[in-house]
Structures are given as structure tokens and as C-alpha cells.
Image 1: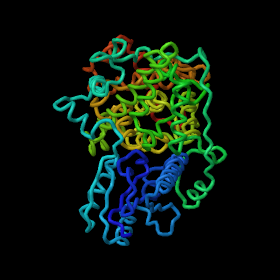
Image 2 (image 1 turned 180 degrees about the vertical axis):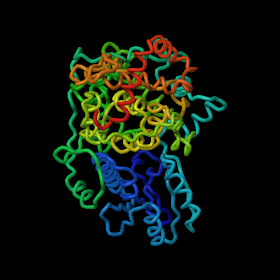
Image 3 (image 1 turned 90 degrees about the vertical axis):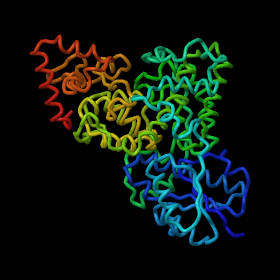
Image 4 (image 1 turned 45 degrees about the vertical axis):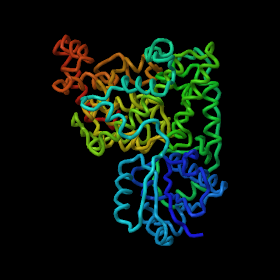
Length: 512
């Protein structure tokens, strides 16, 4: 039977519940492809490349088993032209009666590419929603129209009301919207860590294919086994495991930093969510149900802390991305220009917090949000690293990093490069916060209590120097007034010593 429509499915569009798949239509051909244009635009973690390819192949196999027609172009397929446009062109040429369709991409560059292709190709095209997110692309922009800043809390509360999640009529469950103040405990081993659900996807063939193709990657993969979910069964297993074992203490320790375990009480489902293997609504419903079923074991603070991440932050970040692109790619409000130190790629620094967070990232393609924000991101912001370099590192090293979620988190939340459009203040700290939320300082070569001197923790002088050199831009921010009052009370000799130390550090970043 002649193909009447070619439907393109991207590697982060693996949602089996999409209406496209409700019926098997022999006149529809689904096209999926592994292409160098996607593997090569930054240096990705090897686990990220392999996870996407493995998940794509599993999804294609599932569709095929249900009777859908699939054309899957592996990276080593001799027909593969290694880009979306070139592959689409020859597939449409081989199916001259076919129109083409695609789901809305979640990356601006692909959105622009597909709109351009739609005007270039001499066939009709149509685009449909991914049916994944809980909000439309423009929801954040519309919600904050006329405002100078995007405040998460008001957007989050509005979504709670719309969805009814953790609501009692028009009021929030428990009488509070937000339990963030209860989500900041340091982990001392007070409660046992959850048992690790080990997924062992053997990916020898994929690894050999990627290496043979010469794809440049970073990081490592132990014993050729991928511990991330690559299909719906594994993703649901991970979600269930989190609900039973991680959720009871998730909220309390979600900000804690520990070397006891790379995942602590976190869910490990971010890859499954961002590849759309899991739908956010089913995740939220399952977590809320677990809390309702076990209120004696799971406090509201644990459940709300998780709901806020998915319902609030994830939808909010995506909305900011579409509200601010493409200008967001160029944002650098503080004018930072220094190169990223080479030890970001090998973890060879004497700063224990950074060496551990980076080494963990290289080993697992994962670090939780506080390691990203208050360790690696904090250091890059204090040191004055160019946001574009920080951006490329985050986009490449983390398995869940797709531009729509990575860019606003990096440029806005982590690097304050948007000048405060997203964050109400720069998220920076001295060693004091690191000591409060983790154990890194106890095993570090540097002294967390010293501001200057040979062994003083670099975070301390860089913290004060950051505020000093950006005083004109930050002094009117009401959330950091105390910082300037403290700085101004220091004697001039102390200020000079701090500035000199910070200056030396910025000139010798490679040696830290």
C-alpha cells in the first residue's frame, strides 16, 4: 500500500500514549533516525548517547510489534545521510505521494529547522503537539505578560489549582503551598539509604557502533552496562521503586550533598521524563497516591517537594525557554569571559566538592540539582566563567540535559546570565553553605573557614569578590543587602587581602 504520510519521531519523543499511535494505519510510515548532527553539536556523555539510541530502538521495536510501519536509520545504516533534513529528503523522494508530519520539537534550533524544511519541501506538512507537557509552550509568557520577572511560586500555585494536585477544594493540602523550608536537611545517615534498583542494559553493540563511527564523547560506562531506563517497563519500575523507598525521605534530603551514594533519595526518572517515556501527569498522580496511601510514613513535605519539581519547576523552565529564545542563547548580563578550567572534564582539582561532583558526573552522567547549582554552577559563577562554556558542559555531561531544560537552568538559575529574569538573586555561596549541606569540606585540602592564605577555600574569597566587582548591578537587590552591609563593615586590609586572593585564583584556575 502506498505511503500517504511520513511521520518523524525524535529521540526525545518516545511517548507511546500519543494519539498518533491510537490506530495502525498502513498508509503511515514512522521515521526515526540516529544522526551525527545530534551526537556532535556538543561532546555528550557516552551514557547519554547510548541511552537515547537504546531507548529509541526499544520504542521503534514496540511500535513495530503493534503493527506500525517503521523506518529506523541506525547511525551505521549505509542509507543514513546523518542529518534530519537530508534523510527526510530522500525518504520523501522515495514516497512521492506522501506528506510529512512531525511533533513540535522541544529545541528551538530544531523547531526553526523543521519550519524551514516545511517551506522548502514541495510536499505538504503538518505539526502536532507532543501531548506530553501539562502547559502549552507559551503558558509562562502569557501568565507573566507585562511583568519584568518570572516568579515560580505564583505560576506553581496556579498549576496546583488547575490540576487539583495536593489541593483540598481551593486550598492547598495541609494549609501551605510550599514546604521548601523543610527540604534542606543535611544527611548524616539518620535513616537508611534506599536500596539501589540496578538496571543492567547490556549495550556492547551500541558502544561499538558509536566508537567505530568516531563520535567524540565524554565520561565512562562501567562494564558496558547502562543503568538508566530505556523502555516503559524499566521506567515504571524505577518510579515504583522511588515511591516505595525514596519518597518517604525525598523532601527532607533533596538538597543534601553526600558521598555516601550518588543518588541518595532522588528518583532517577529525569531521563525517562525528558525522553517522554513517562508522562509527567502519571508520575505526579502516582507520587500523590503513594502519599495518600501512606500518610503515616510519608509526610506532606516529602510529596510536595517532589510535586514542586515536576509540576512547578519543569513546566516553568520549559515556558521560560520558549518565552526567551533565541536571545537566551546569548545572555551574559554579568559579562563573564573566563574559560572553563580543564579539570571540569577530568575532576582533577583539590577542591573536594568539585572533584567529587564532577567525578560522579563523569561516572554516572548524573548529579542532583544542588550539586549542579551550588557546587559546579556556584564555582563557575563566582569565578566569572563564560556562560556559553558552562552551558556546553552541562548540556553534554548530563543524561537528562536537553536544551529546553538545561539552558534556562544554566543561564538563568545557575549563572544569573539573564540578569535576574528567572532567579531573584544570584545563587552563590561561600564555603559556609557547602559545610551546612554536605560533608565535602571535612575531607578537603582547603580550609573552609579561611578567606585568604595559601590553603583558604577558593569559594570564600571568590564569593566576596563576586559581590564586590558586581556591586553596581546587585546593590539594589533587596535579597542580598546583608552581604554588602557585612562587606562594608570589614576593615580595608581584609578587603584588600580578599581581592588579592580572588585575583590570584582567577589567574590560576587550572592549578586549583
